[in-house]
Image (cartoon, rainbow, N blue to C red; front, side):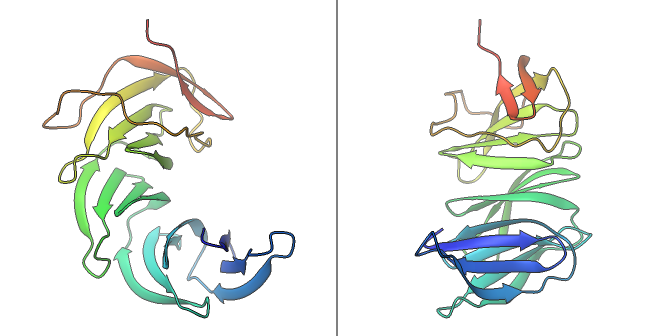
Length: 203
């Protein structure tokens, strides 16, 4: 990410490496978190870290020296597990579902939408689409193009339950669909393996 590698150690916090020379990464800074680190996401000089047993989301800013400084706590005691950034949106997966937040003004983050589903443990973004898996192994797709209210466009009932398996993203847009006024669910299926959740072909 911009010549920097952000590495989290569950017991030793956040480490930032300069990878301008990939064969010789150089440790330039370290930020000691309050507890176990679940995930990290970076955009420009902004670094979001899920920190601590409670899954607090902390906003760090990387200074010109490379040193990260704590600027604010975005979500506290939220039971958050995973985080991704898509443009000015932060996608936060946790025990109560998926939260989509506008972080264009980090000092005043705005919750745009929340999909309440049990134990969303992993989230990824690709283009205008967000993908996330819940505790039952279901794969969900949400369209992020609607700025005020991101729309859920598809859901896939899993044939297996492997929460936390990595999702493999391509570069594409969400399926075209009519606007919806609330989250909704379809009946397509997906096969969950240790390499991720793969939607079955549409008949």
